Length: 573
Ligand code: FES
Image (cartoon, rainbow, N blue to C red; front, side, top):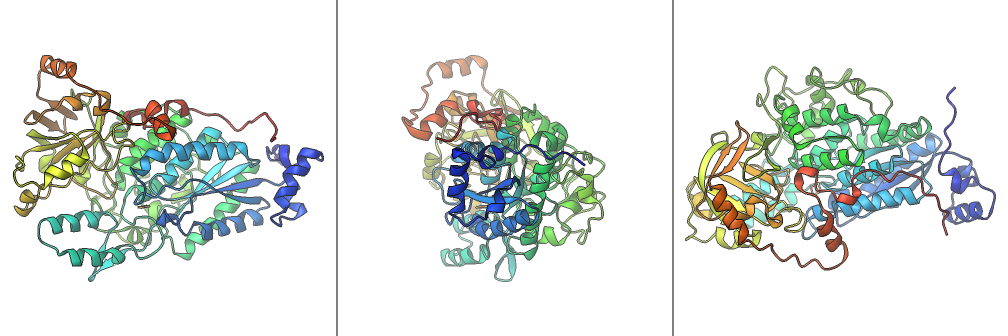
């Protein structure tokens, strides 16, 4: 029989001295019985519950089910809150605070007498931040996600979070939808607890996490309000105790193969471009070499198998009923690393064995994909020396090779101001260029890369144009949108020097983005360029601005890359 590991919680709860008294006595004020301090694993439940993050508002309920599983398996559950990042509420953008949450998660785990952690979260930035922080500590952890909302229903048809907001809003601007109808769609879109039910960033992250073996199977797709999610939470509670007793740390579970599986999965589900940033940052925390170029090289020949919005027709509820992520992984089994480890102690292969596949419209067969090639294309060129990305599956095929004149906006505010101006000199072949929206620029790299189109072109029936920026794009959005240009304009990247009327060439097949301006002229423009004033004199904004890395490095902070480990040598005083 395997020897029981020495638990770090015993440093606090296992001593019969003054320190042990203090650690136990105050915990007992909550009614925890004496026998719960008998040397059993203490499991933290790291909860991003908040009413300001509506997609996490049911997490205290799920936490109770996790606790039930932990008790049942012989552990002691302790729930603790961490900062919550509501994607639809936080200014200037939730992404600004991803690294702050990651830092809080890391120190909350390190500073407390816990042996393993369940990461309970679910909005776009909460799960990546929790995983980043937990990876830097290195204790066993697994993820329980919020789960997606029920499908939106509006006037007899399904509508998707985010995706249909963009469509309705363009319809209002084109005069095709009344403001009254627009507003009546609000309640119809968000019908239950849970995360956005399109294949936006939250759904993508949950599915990708599952493909990495960091959660139990079906965690990515079970609807938030389905009783199966409560049962999965209970099972996850049992699993984390087993992980602690068997010392299944992130080093055991995560490998280069897990990240390659994540990239393949992201391509096949038509996942969000934001995942690129998050996976790069997570890999950085565990010291695993992952490069921007890997997303292209590994994902390039993966077919798009899931027909979900924003790229396709269906929603997360449909995906779950069609067989969930295991059915998707089953279709990909010849390309995945099926021996990659999971939180269960079994290889990924066990997640797909016997997986049912019930709808070949929602989850396509390999022989009948939505698109032959999905994945994220990584562009290089004199406009993005450190790279830029585009999601071809969400773009207009005819625009993937395009030459046009730049219409330049120095900020998102200027973009909003000028875009609706009838005198704006723009036509369908123009390329919309947005500056000042990178990690340092906004600050926080907002999701504004899918700029709205000029009303006069919308009215003429134009639905897409080439747009490029150093910003991000919501996972629920779509269009021929080049994102994450690095270095960003606020750092003096070449994007900063693009001027109105410059010719730009996009060639996604050739993986290039070229500004048709001579090197001499660019040098001349650079010499007269002034960096924008940052106005970030204090607090977290200052820290972030000083230390955030560029998009091609995952936009983590330079001093957070790598691990601290779980050992804190000094006693609590
Ligand atoms: Fe939280 Fe979309 S707003 S998942």
